[in-house]
Length: 139
Image (cartoon, rainbow, N blue to C red; front, top):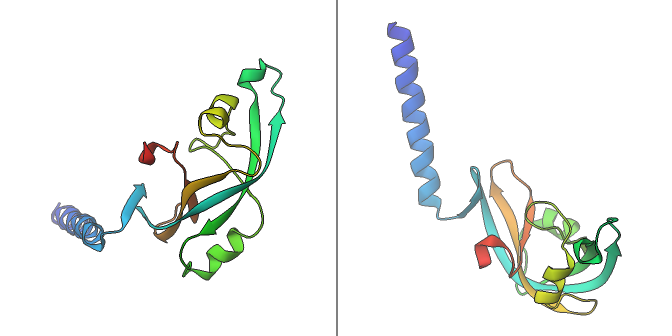
């Protein structure tokens, strides 16, 4: 009983310490216990291709590829490899965008969209994420 109580107290102190340590860092917490650093930039759309889902055309998804151009130098070398070449645009839920979103935000081949590249600083989440005007955190 004594060792179980001691174990509980040690775990509690550890968890509270981790909580306050993460608050002091000031990094943006995107999901879970992961922290990200944000790099502003633009997405230059290089291709938009309709993916036939077999449903109404308005429900079809689109494969959109873009090149990310940061407005400042990215400090993390691993990110430079990840953003080489065209990047597939995925929504926050991992799906492809639908026609209504492309029309609302004027996404077409050659368009330039303000966005941010979120680079992981700590945790075990996705190493990079992109946020766009339609992302929940930007509305």
